[in-house]
Length: 284
Image (cartoon, rainbow, N blue to C red):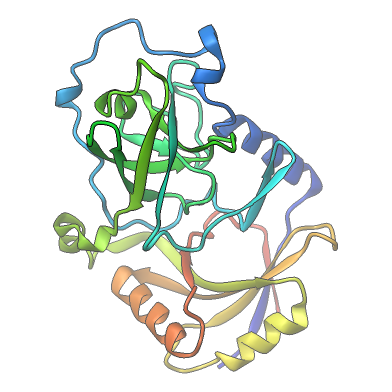
């Protein structure tokens, strides 16, 4: 198989703009800490008519899924998978102040939708959230980052918080657990749908090009799609080399690649969307 290295060049100005947008689009604080600057809408809502988020199979979002990111002087590592994730802690919520603003994955925040923010889960992730005080349960789709308070594990949309009956107190003790979309019948019915555009399976990122090339050579196989290395970052001290397989056009194909990589000793591979990486050049 012919080997190639793709170099994705990101300009310093783009990095700076992206960093600013990340700070602005992420959920950086919860409304309970902001007093009158955030809160519920003036109109009344019939929560019973708003259904839970329906888990469906999706690729990782283009935005909001860096390997690590920093907020308020603290660095967070984004998880490669949500499978088996369960945690208990304090939930808060956010409302009118952020309504319509971009979330970390680029979608507009809808306080009337069943969404949430989490510090480290992949975007998107579907979560079952249970209020441990009253045992009310909902399903939300995580598409944002936050809350950046050590004592809180999730920020809920206004409607999600209302369904759990935590608006009055502002916070509540909850249990959150990841929902596997593959266990959702409607998601399985669409499992053979082609992706809108080709995606890639990434097995890891390396600071040293030699190490990345060594892994690439080890996994060069006729049973797998073409394997490439993509460089991210203009500053040499910040550069990483990502080993990716693709292009991949359907979920069954992606599953097969992930299975083969796991058998070869790489169990943490993930499906990624690299459509935004338009500044690419090939090195023979």
